Length: 261
Image (cartoon, rainbow, N blue to C red; front, side, top):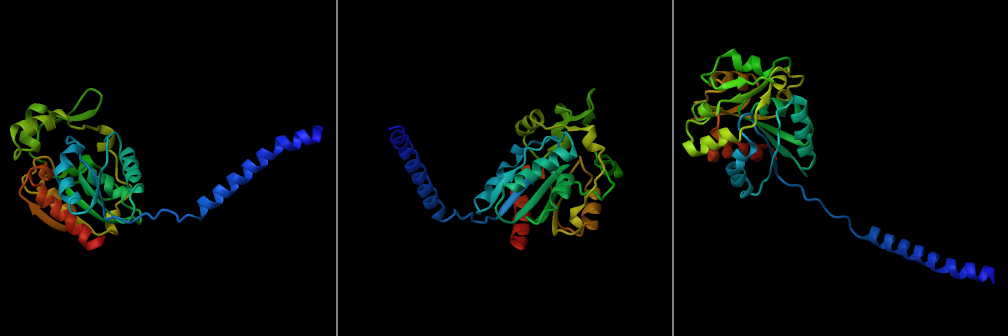
């Protein structure tokens, strides 16, 4: 009697296990989902201008069929922003054009080393050589801006009252006032960190000179782009050239994608 009870109790469990095995086999027999490679663009914003300023460029490229991602860069440290950018790149399926604005140029010069990154685009951006830090480059040829100052904790902010004058003189006052209020600051740690990689040496790269830039001297931009052998486009615009001239900036990014994706 005891054996019969055990048999009756064990039977359903065995059948349940068999049923699960059959289900698992059936599931395994199904075709795995196919991940379709896309044409990807990943953008690293600069300091003092948050990622939302790229929304028009995003819309232009998105409506042309590109998968566009804007990295939520914090500018606390170079390593942190590189890690955030690599996480964004990990999410991409297929080749990617990596874009950097301002200090975001230092980030893409490190994060763009993987095979997934087909080209780099610098937009009014820093392009440091190994051993150079952002402060060195920004002070090489002083720019006209005087609104950037560190606070007591060593974090650089742009004076909101002068944000439009230095960053976006070609923007409407209302828009500039909001961007000054929503700015992302950058730490002294980041500004003083020397580059330990310069992937532009072996990646195709494109660049935008903002000819009316008061934050990063246009001649400094030209010097960095020249030594990187970048394909350079000069656009009459402020440091916020991607906001004031989004169609022209998007055109440069799209050209990099057409050439390399």
